[in-house]
Image: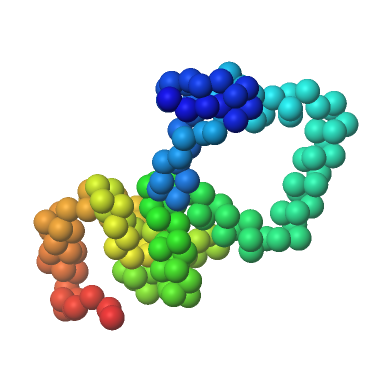
Length: 166
């Protein structure tokens, strides 16, 4: 049981929303009945002029802050994939735009992909789009990867097996 901060009525814990921030769960201090249904309700009530002004402000901010926008997009994407954005950002910054597999930058101007174990979320490295897609098509299976490598080597005369770049 908990007393709502707004209506000051003692209610059971299921009458409160649970919020997760930085991996920790928090129980809201205000009951569900006293909270607005969604944060977007005010936006629905805006006039068309107010909406247009808000959208323009967002576009202007994005033009003034392109690097911050890219960083925020990366971090949001990593969160959706279950990757710790702080660790991924540190790893990303340390790579200076080079793929761990081929050593090349992502040719299309996009950010490198964070290669991670889908089970644990552990970061394995940074990959360009091509290497990331190849790894995905091969289902992260070392046997498949070795078989493709052996296939290429066997069919291209004059190519000597080499160790991965360092």
